[in-house]
Amino acid sequence: MKGVYSYDLMESVRNTNEWLGASARAMASYPVWGLVPHPMFKVMSAWGRITERSFARMVIKPDWGIRTVVGADGRDHLVDIQSLIASPFGDLIQFGVLGRDPMPRRVLLVAPMSGHYSTLLRSTVASLLPDCDVYVTDWHNARDIPVSKGKFDIEDYTLYLVEFMRHLGPDIHVVAVCQPAPIALAATAYLAGEDPAAQPCTLTLIGGPIDPDAAPTEVTDFGRRLTMGQIEHLVIQHVGFKSAGAGRLVYPGLLQLASFISMNLDRHAQAFSNQILRAAKGEDGERDAHNRFYDEYLSVMDMTAEFYLSTVERIFKKREIARNCFEVEGKQVDIGKITDVAVMVVEGEEDDISAPGQCAAALGLCTGLPDSMKDSHLEPGAGHYGIFAGKSWRNNIRPLVLDFFDRNSEGKRKRKNPRNNIRAV
Image (cartoon, rainbow, N blue to C red):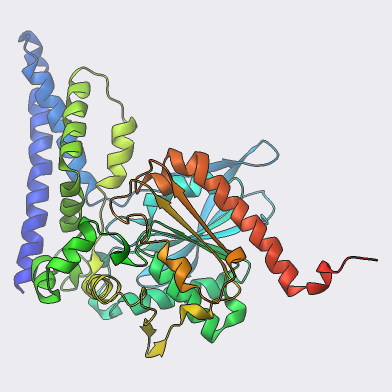
C-alpha cells in the first residue's frame, strides 16, 4: 500500500500549506501591527489569505452557481438542476428552467474528465441556457467512489455516453469538449452500428485529441516518451484512508494540477504575485477575475487509474480512434457507419493542449457522411480554454454552433420526410 502513503503525504503537504496561509493571515492581521507603519504586514496578510484560499480550493467541488436565466419574455426564470440518470461514476443532469416552455434546441454537453469537475463548463452552460435546453455529464471524483462500485475505464465511459444519448433521444445535439471528443465520436459510431434510431442529431467536437499525432504538443510528447509501466509507476496512487474510495487506484487530482501549472508556470507565478500586491493594496475582491478563474482551476478531482491508463494507451499511444480500430466490449466501433449525424469540429489557433489538426481528423474518419454534413472552424488567436468558455466562444464560436444545430435539425427533418422536398406544381 505504498501508494496510500504517497497519496496521504501529498494531502498532508496541501493541508500544511493551507494551515501556513491561515496562520500568516491571522498573525499579520492583529490590530497591534497598526502601530508599526511597515508594509510587510499587509503583504504577509495578503500572502496568507491567497495561499489559504488557493490550497483550500483544491479539495472543494465548485458550485454551478447558475440560478436564473432571462427568458424570451424578458423575465428572470429560476434554474433547477435535476439528476436524470444517477450512476456511480457520473450523472446526467438537466438545467431545468422553471416557467419556460421546452426549447427547440436540446444540447448535451459532454464535460471533460481530465482533472477538473464538470463545472469547468459553467460559462458554456450559462451562454447556451437562454437558447437551449441544456444537459451535462456530471462526473464524480474517484476518491469518493468506494472500491465496491467496480472499475471505470474508457469503454465504460463510452457506454455511459451511449446510455445518456439513448435517454435523451435522437433530437439531441451533442457537444464534446476536449478530452471526451474522441469518445463521443466513438459512442455515436457505436449507436450507428447497434441502435441507429438513437443517434443524436448533430455532434460538435471542440478541441479534442481525435488524432494526437496530427500535431504534437507537450501532452502528446509525454505519452510518447514514457512506457505504460513508467507512467503507472509515476502517477498512479491508492486513495488515502480518509476518503470513501480508500484503496482505489487513481491518478490524483493534485498531481494533475501540478502538471497543468507546470505547462505555464511563469504565467501562473506572475498572476499570483500580482494578486498578492493587489490584495496588500486593498484592490482585490472576493469574486474578482483572479479568484473567479483560480477558484475553478485549482479545484481538481481524481480519475480512476484504469480510465487514465486506458485513455493514454488507446487514444494517444495506439491511436485506436484515429486508426478507426476502437472496440467496446469486443465489438468493433466503425466511425464510417455514421451516416445521419452532422459533425462539426472547432479548434483554436493557439491551442497548446489539442493543437489544430488533432480534432479536425474526425472529419476524415466520417467516410459515410457527405461533405454537406461536415463543418469545421479554426478560431484565430484562441487558446484551449477560449474556444469553449472565453471571449472567442461567446462572440464567434457559439453563434456558429447554434447555426450548425439549426441547419442540420432542418436537414434531418427533410431527410426523414422526403415528401417535404417535393414542390407543388
